[in-house]
Image 1: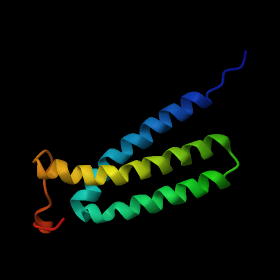
Image 2: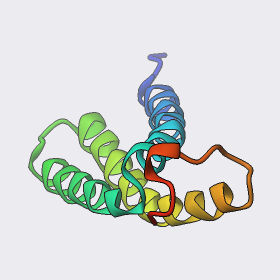
Image 3: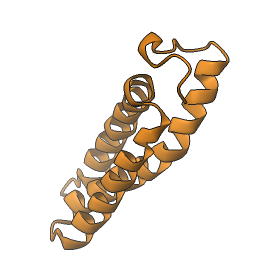
Image 4: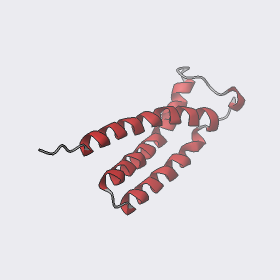
Amino acid sequence: MELNFFGLIIGVATFLIIGLFHPLVIKAEYYLGVGSWWLFLVGGIVGCAASLLVADTVISILLGVFAFSSFWSIGEIFEQRKRVEKGWFPANPKRKGKK
């Protein structure tokens, strides 16, 4: 019997990718504001294109996870602004008054 580790590899890597995007969204909103949404859009588009072009199945899947985590982050950046307005996260004092 041969063990197949692809599922575990993809599961762990997906967990890490999604976990990475949480602080990325927080930092992007803090330093760049919601105008940083386009960076996540570009990351998603690049991730999708790379996923289509890579021959290795596991890497292609992980690029797809990265791409759609980027797309999801576009909405989260605007939600983060609301969380900052509610006082759940600190606002960047250097961007006071800017949205």
